[in-house]
Every structure is written in C-alpha cells, then in structure tokens.
Amino acid sequence: MIIAFAGQKGGIGKSTTAIAVAAAAHDRGMRVLLVDADPQGTARTWADVAGEAGHSTPTVVAMGATMHKAGQLASIAQAYDLTVIDCPPRHGDVQRSALMVADVVVLPSGPSAADAWALAASIEVVQEARVLREELVALVLITRKQGRTALAKSARRVLESSGFPVLKAELGYRVAYQEAIACGRGVTTHAPRDAAAAEITSLIAELETYAHGQEESRRFVAQAAAAG
Ligand SMILES: Nc1ncnc2c1ncn2[C@@H]1O[C@H](COP(=O)(O)OP(=O)(O)OP(=O)(O)O)[C@@H](O)[C@H]1O
Ligand SMILES: [Mg+2]
Image 1 (cartoon, helix red, strand yellow):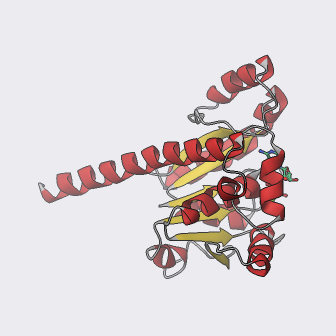
Image 2 (tube, rainbow, N blue to C red; image 1 turned 180 degrees about the vertical axis):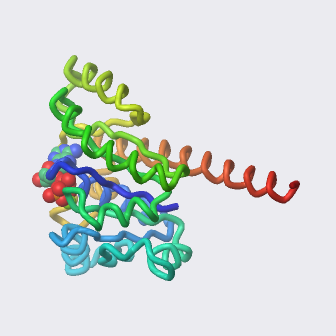
C-alpha cells in the first residue's frame, strides 16, 4: 500500500500528516517506509531529530522524479506494509512521479472556501494522472481546522463538489502536531491523550478501508481474468 500526500499549495500539512501517519503505523508495529520526496527534507530532518533523541522511526529514504520507474519505489515498497510519500509543493516531475506509483493520493486542504478553491489545480493534476492510471484513488483531507465552525462545513461542501471523496476524518489545528514533529516523534506516541492522536488513528482506519477496497477489486479483476 503506497499513500502519497500531495498538493500544489505549500504549508498545508502534507509533511505533518505524512509523518504522523507513518510514525503511528510504525509505532503500531507495521513495517513502514517513509519516502521524503521534498528537497526541503522535512521528513529526513524529523528522522534525524528522532535518531538523536533515541526514538525509533520508520525507514526514511529520499527519492525524486524517477521513483515510478521500474526497479525503484514499487520494488522497495514490497518489503513494507505501508509506504508513505511526502511530496513537495508545486506540480513538478516529482509529484507526477509519485502519482504514477501511489495506490492512494491524499490531498490535504485547509478548512476555508479559499483553501477549497486553491485545490482546483491539484485536482486537475490528479485527474491527468488518473487518465493513465484509473486505479489511483484520490481523497481530500480537511486539516488545520479551528473549532467546529460553519466555515468548515461550507468548505466540505465546496470540496465535495471537486469530484473526489472527502475523508470523514478531519484534523484540527493542534499544537500537538507541531510539538511531535519538533521532538522527532509521532503524535500518537507523543501525545496519546490529545485529540490529535485520535484524529490520526481515525484517519489511518479510514485509509485502511480504502486500501482494503482496492485489494478486493484487484482480487476480483484477477479472478475474473483467470475465469476468462
Ligand atoms: N493539523 C495541524 N495543526 C497545527 N499545525 C499544523 C497542522 N498541520 C500542519 N501544521 C503546521 O503548518 C505548517 C506547514 O505544515 P507542513 O510543513 O506539514 O506543510 P507542507 O504542506 O508539507 O508544506 P510544504 O509545501 O512547504 O512542504 C507547519 O508549521 C506545521 O507545523
Ligand atoms: Mg512538506
């Protein structure tokens, strides 16, 4: 299972969410590969901080615009239960490469209507990738939400009209996410009683249902092919 966190806009929570998900799955005993596809190196720096503090982390590797090629990420990912790709902002070759190899792409979005509108460009790029890869699942994630505002509700409506499903799990704007990154941990182990930990747990559970659905449809296609 390969999940890419992508999107054109900078600073929307791609790295924070990718790291939180990868770390939570790792701390749960899964074999996790975290691919740092951003030259800014957020995930690598996080892993360095973790290493210095003696915290165990997923395997972190840096990869770029060739990750979709034969013998690259798809072969490495086979040794892991979960692979998480943290994409750079903007739609360059790196993000395109990630979309060619991922099973699921998650597009984080802020909770305002303006954030939802800004997602349009990312949606277009994912649609293009889906022309080549029908099986690519694209999901929108509302993140950095502040309070139970009516604003978030209307953003959900705008996001839903994008044509991609909007994940039920939503992430709030919470200091725990920032603190966990700063000290080289996953938020679920750093602050297990914080609402952030519950949000990440729900997000993973929901992503697992999509992964499961994909596995089932792959099996169905294989069976249908075998049956002629
Ligand atoms: N749910 C959240 N709650 C609070 N702060 C958050 C949350 N998600 C992200 N942030 C903060 O927002 C800023 C940007 O987040 P992050 O680095 O994850 O975004 P990004 O999309 O990876 O950015 P870039 O496009 O530059 O790679 C960081 O300061 C991060 O701590
Ligand atoms: Mg980032």
